[in-house]
Length: 105
Image (cartoon, rainbow, N blue to C red; front, side, top):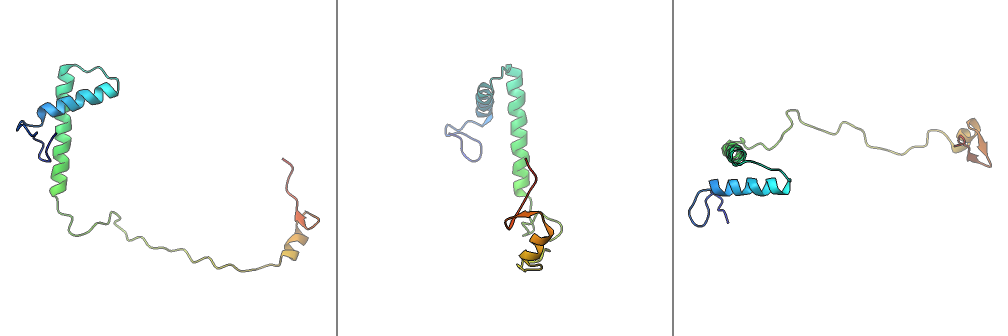
């Protein structure tokens, strides 16, 4: 089992583990990779993980906001109101026994 620093309990580095991980992912994805491709993908994966390690060390200046402009609610609160009476609405619509009729489907 690997340690957080990338080494294994037996003291070896993570390079062998990366090749084994690449082979396992390739097997699950049903890909046939040559040993050269496995080595290249293992190196690429190690590079990506190193870039993330560099990003982890970067200062965030105490801010955790991803929006450059503050986001605020600019919509009004919904307040129910009765602007027109239901009787007036039904008088303007095609109704049948006090029910609104819609188009035939």
